[in-house]
Amino acid sequence: MKRKISILGSTGSIGRQALEVIEKLGDKFDIIALTAGNNINLLNEQIKKFKPKYACASNMSLIDGAIPATLEEICSNKENDIILVAVSGKIGLKPTITAINNGIDIALANKETLVMAGDIVMPLAKEKGVKIVPVDSEHCAIHQCIKDIAQVDRLIITASGGPFLHKSIEDMKNATVEQALAHPRWNMGKKITVDSATLMNKGLEVIEAHHLFGMDYDRIKVVVHPQSVVHSAIEYVDGSVIAQLGLPSMHIPIQYAITYPERFEGIKSKSFSFSEIARLDFEEPDWDKFKALNIAYNAGKIGGSATVCMNAANEEAVFAFLEGKIRLFDIIDSVEEMMSKHSVSYNLSIDDIFDLDNEIRAKTREFLHVAV
Ligand code: NDP
Ligand code: MG
Image (cartoon, rainbow, N blue to C red; front, side):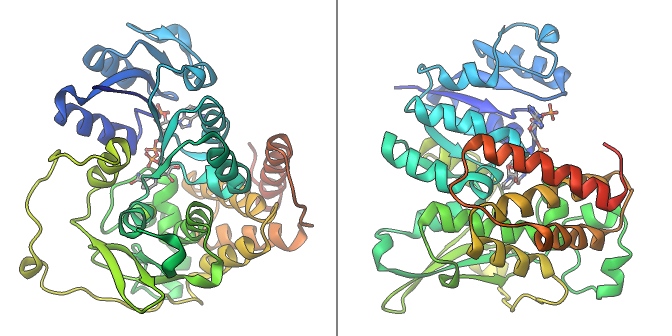
């Protein structure tokens, strides 16, 4: 039977690749809805090709060929078997909760959802019997390795190290936007690419892993692996380590997440060859250069509102960096500043989370002297 799917953020990097996977898989999917932000031209091209019933964009009146519907309406539509949440930023949180409340399985790319509200989202999914299958390559790798989480001692998350892995702190301080966006392995949206340059992305992924797999922070380890072939690993209590390997392509984790628990041939550019890869390198992260990683571990361990504060400050500062208004290291300075002034609270509601998110964003802009 065909799976009925909606893609939130179909015009983004993950969304476009998901449509490539779906196209390749032929008759496996029926698309219920596609959604964009501002890229209405691409959305309308996608509507023409994939014929979803519904579509959403920032300007609904420009949608051509599908019934306009809000993200909330799309996520409450029980026609969906699965929703791929591939929007960027906080916009992913509420629709994800709506989909879970309606018993719809989630393929989750949007990591902010768990960083902001993992304590709400994961128990709710459990209560509603909803599967959350990760798209993020590291978590997808871990998902593929785990048989019984109770037997797992540690999660080992790999990090490519980004464009500044072997550059000096000075080089990194003076990095241009172009240099920060030149990721050596992955072609992704701009926000996550900047996060990969500071290693905040890995910090967000540690928090994401904590929520997805219910693992304590001191049992989640990050190792730098520049080739991005080992996508992550787990160590069982008996010392056995299972890793998931593959050529660096997001098609594989996207396909895994939207077809789970089945597997299909899909988009496979070539077979995996150990001898062609020849070597795999691993090293400890440079904690002085990549302070974001430590900040994220600390925020995760504190929990409650700490990760909301960190995420909001980081995202707002990344936008300012992308607009050329601040330097790369100012991102980390502003996150540290916001964290140091923040008094942590627990048991937040979704509304509390959004209020705090807005407050921290405004304070971050004030600290950085940047207008909205
Ligand atoms: P992109 O920036 O490429 O795409 C973001 C998508 O979200 C676009 O479709 C965009 O629409 C839409 N969008 C953005 N803001 C809004 C809004 N306010 N309302 C509605 N739609 C909006 O991001 P990525 O695809 O790179 O990343 C998506 C998510 O997946 C992120 O959370 C990221 O962390 C995560 N992720 C991405 C990976 C990757 O390889 N790219 C890997 C692992 C995780 P439009 O372009 O039309 O404005
Ligand atoms: Mg990742």
